[in-house]
View 1 (cartoon, one colour):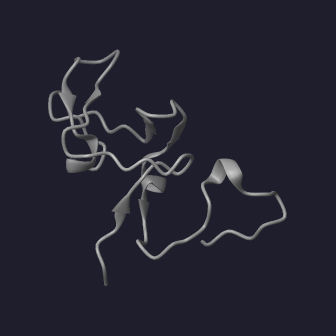
View 2 (cartoon, helix red, strand yellow):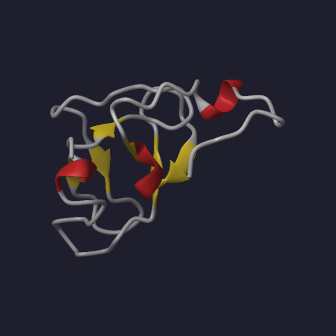
Length: 86
């Protein structure tokens, strides 16, 4: 099995290891949220939703991990009648 690719489910932006999220309004720690599965290393809070640093949309953290062979368009471009993978 291949490692999942990390990308925004809305715009497909792929954050580099230098991207940093902040634990606000909690402890203010800056970190690469995908290195810890969304858990702040400063205070231990688990962030279930992640905001894209590129498009600003907020999505469930788990939705950022995708099969690298998934070729569906970004969620923002899918039609309602278009099937999605589970």
